[in-house]
Image 1 (cartoon, rainbow, N blue to C red):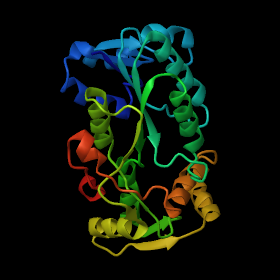
Image 2 (cartoon, rainbow, N blue to C red):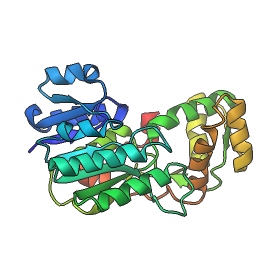
Image 3 (cartoon, helix red, strand yellow):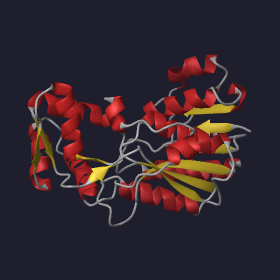
Image 4 (cartoon, rainbow, N blue to C red):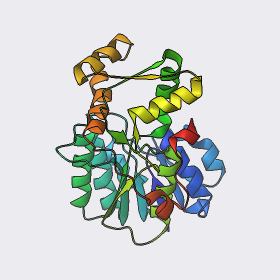
Length: 280
């Protein structure tokens, strides 16, 4: 069975590739990337590294040739990535791929204000309608990206947030990769959507407690509204076209859209999920 990973040179892609190459014969692994030179080390391990650019759909069918299962890793062009995702799905179907998994987000529904939801919802819809067998990997927010947040709070003595009392079940990229490999290398996942989460939902109070432990000094939680949070991000140097996206994750957290905790990492990924506290 041949398994392909798109975006294989990215953070998540490399983690999936590493675990996949430890699980199956490298000759069965196809790694797709816009720049094959970036994956020369994986080619040396026996993986088939192929060029694949979602903006060149005419070349994508050849990239998926001979592949039975594929992981479509969402690109980072938020708001401008659906066309590329759809091109990849169409090419995979034309090439004869049987089953495709897709990295989505928790609760990609109209009432979830997270700014990435429209892209993920549109891609999920297209995958369901493609004729391919599908699996949705609805990854919670990455725990890896919260390490700096906690460190900054520890340094300043304040955790400024728009979370309210909500929590997010942060999950590490490593754990997300393990679930992806589990789906790609075992049976029974077709037509299913999995919430991929860490072992607990962390509130602002929990994050402040981690920061307090790190610094040895009390860290205060400062709750602000969405407008003030966005303004604070811009003042801190976040580009004004990106700040609202970061704010939207806090809004989604406040509304409970990221609080669900599951055992998917353990059941499908075959490992205990890593708590944010251990990562820090």
